[in-house]
Image (cartoon, rainbow, N blue to C red; front, side, top):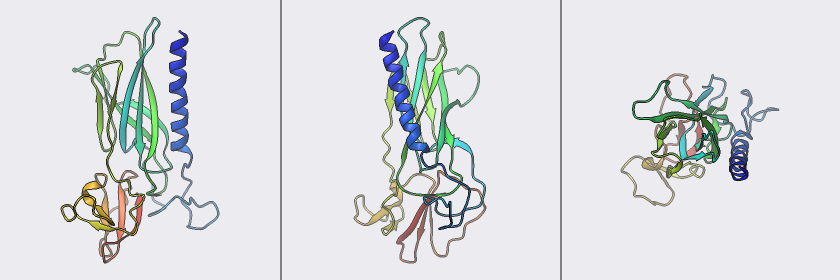
Length: 234
């Protein structure tokens, strides 16, 4: 029993630390740049409504731990990456209700998104837990995020995903290259192939349609020479 408590205490500590990293800069209401109380990490459009709870950008790991005493139960611990600061309250929620035909429990990793657009300053870790009741018949766990999904085929166990996308924290000042226009590793260049799915590059003559904002969509503002002058998560 002592061993089980130590394991669960370790999980709890990880969750607290991850939640702190993801929630240390929850965005405030829209404010004018430089005004008192303005969110200094905000960038891009302001004032329009944002989504609230929605899938995080990536799921990066699944770990399922089983208790050692009766009645035995399983704890699902999932780690992921959010696009920016300002995300909070990570949760695992069922993707659908009812018994799955393949005995794989399907979950979404969601969180409360920022209320303002955020500068691209790198991905931030986040995590959440879900407890399976004793006597369940689940044989595997699948977790979905906005840009990927990860499956653990056997319980207990672990699964990991390698996230290779460019988080664009060092994109400003570099040239943007459309798909197929630059070789991997080209100095001073940001390739379309390396960016998170769903991004958009906005040129000086590029309009923007609609007012729907997606905090998982990366925006690159480029000048007439294709140099990136601003990067933000919408």
